[in-house]
Amino acid sequence: MAALCEEDPSLEKHFKGHRDAVTSVDFSRAKKQLVSGSMDSCLMIWSMKPQMRAFRFLGHKDAVLCVQFSPSGHLVASGSRDKTVRLWIPSVKGESTVFKAHTATVRSVHFSSDGQSLVTASDDKTIKVWTVHRQKFLFSLSQHINWVRCARFSPDGRLIVSSSDDKTVKLWDKNSRECIHSFCEHGGFVNHVEFHPSGHCIAAGSTDNTVKLWDVRMNRLLQHYQVHSSVVNSLSFHPSGNYLVTASSDSTLKILDLLEGRLLYTLHGHQGPATCVAFSRDGELFASGGSDEQVMVWKTNFDADDGDVVKPQKYSSSVDGTHGTVIVSVLEQRLTLTEDKLKECLETQQKIIQNKTN
Image 1 (cartoon, rainbow, N blue to C red):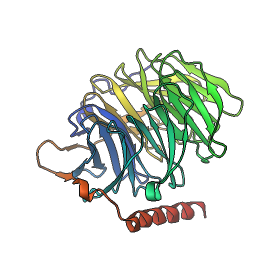
Image 2 (cartoon, one colour):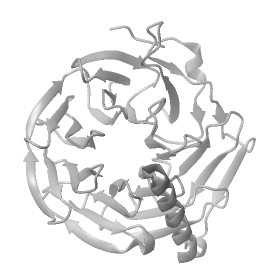
Image 3 (tube, rainbow, N blue to C red):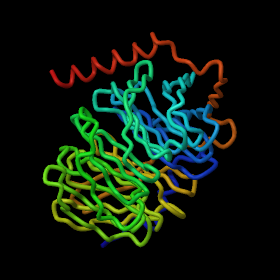
Image 4 (spheres, rainbow, N blue to C red):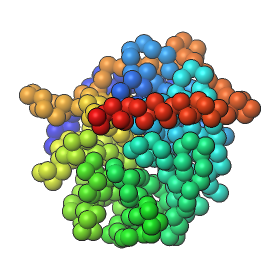
């Protein structure tokens, strides 16, 4: 397969600012912002407009392992090794509310598609579901026998999928709170799991270097990829559902054509393990992060005539020093969002969702 951008100098056009490995990335709904979490205990909010300032959000007391924008883009959730989850307003003030979510490291946070619920996964072997407004705990799912690395809502919100160091992927019914199936085909810890946009299948990446896709209606294995030479850390479906991008400790990203069942492209850019990857909501871009402290934004051109599938974007930002930077330092007594502010965010989110469905 052709390896695009292997020595492309435009790969220098990336976001620099973290002081340790990047662990998680996500785009806002309209692609105006990109959030990244890092082992340096910080979140960075990057503007997708060239030369715009980046914001560093301080508040977590240990490594930030997961970040995600709410569906409306008005909130960011983060989970940390400090056992807490924070909800941030991604603006210059960097206001956040904090809640003690688990008794161990929080590995994963994920909003439901309506933005009303949050699911979290932890090294305490549990998955927990919360309301976003007031951060009220709803229920726990606890059949995993080792650390839970990742948990995701299905697109319709009826199912939850989780992956664990017990080498299983579990499918849960949100209403009955029962585990309805366990997929046990992986030979290693399962680092990451995602629902296909249709909600009909799931993909998981593992320390056994494989990516596997299952049909959740018939609970059968659909596809099995052995394209990486090291641990698969993260993956993301293109919104069309036809492509999957993966990130691995072999330092590469790979794009899989799910319709053809084959590897399309191998992308080189990170120096060291590629730790996270995520498509934008419209699929035009995807972002990756690595242990090299870099965040890279890639352009997706699946329909391009010249055969180029992805190109690095020309966005560039640096937050070394004070130039073009806002450091958002949040004192503990300021770490409360008023309920009015949260309510306002949720109402705006609901209006956007209603407008899209009308």
